[in-house]
Length: 255
Image (cartoon, rainbow, N blue to C red; front, side):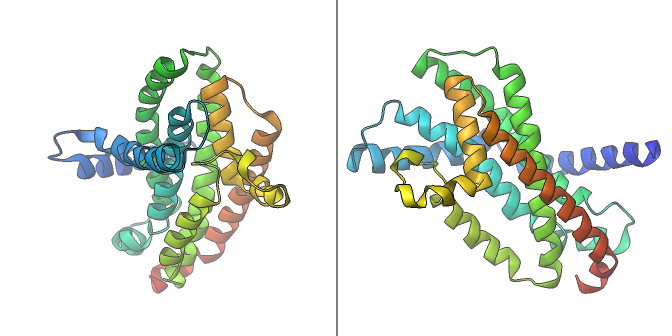
């Protein structure tokens, strides 16, 4: 068991390192490109909603960034990890490895990008709100761990199904784009009509984004919301394990 865990960790490390090197090889700005996407979208949405539509909301730029950075972590992980098996056909067919490591490595890559973006967020929050919270030292790691667990489990399920039904990767892109607008990222949940509130509150994406905002802007965790998100993540983890165990022996033939 120890040998398996050690080899799994080493394999995960090698896969993550390889992908990061490939992605940023010969790039002058390196990992800073990972910050470009959320910042660019935040500027566009700020201009559209604050300048043109004139949403009356204090510290709207901080509100946007504290939603955009976690969302990029979510969306990139799910979209890229859904193709984890189809984009690594040789590893799936010819190399005996624990298959769960492939979507996990993708989620870890995006997690590293997100971790690198946190200092940028903290600096921006400090100069905008003049706030620094000691509680971040334990709150941020808790959120990252639970979010990785959630993203891995949902990505694992989608990656397995995508081997047999190849439309899944396209449907996943559509789903992620739709979910962006159905999650309070560019608008506060208080603007959602009361009769639709329950739909938003049932979404695990809403739970994680609202928790990131609560932590980064107020230094507090919403325990009930976090517990709900954790329970959803655990259920999905069990489901992902069952899905992989059931279909892993058929995947090398179907891929």
